[in-house]
Image (cartoon, rainbow, N blue to C red):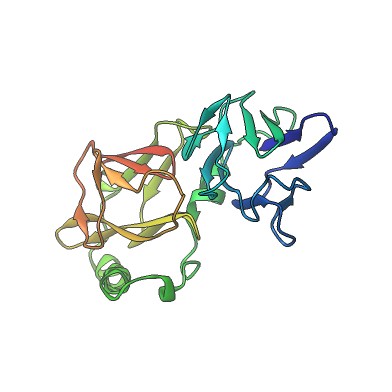
Length: 234
């Protein structure tokens, strides 16, 4: 988990929510009493032990280690300057580590966890199509040797493997980025369901940005999702 230390004031702020806004306005997640800070100055998105920063202020700007920045991945020791305030970014190495189940807890969503209200009509149809394969799978079970795997290649959960042994696996975090990997008669497909502005690079397969339509997956494809690289293995 990331921590921000406010220089010269001894205050620390834990980045313990997936999305946190920092600014001067009452009601934001971290309030800075600095007249040079905008009401909503920066957004920080945290995924596992990684934190992504986006500047929200057109007027005052945000600086990382002295360089003006719009979006970036935060690194240990980065100095974030907003207005006249300086925040130092650290990773809490004394906090709970990433265990074997953390990837499933944070990146694999339970059925119904993503409301269809956030999806477009075509995305909602893709989700419905994926769910409809449950009956097919019950009649034509996939041999264990042919069940697809999702192998995490980067991030704290690197090395973790998840079997796609049900009709649909939903990956991501609500309000950040969400995709669905589904099994159909013609193979496995991935669909982009939702994503928030400022949530880093959009989901992609082999570097190609995912759109609303379903994209077929083949052995060795590399899925980029919310700063994590996941290999599809069949």
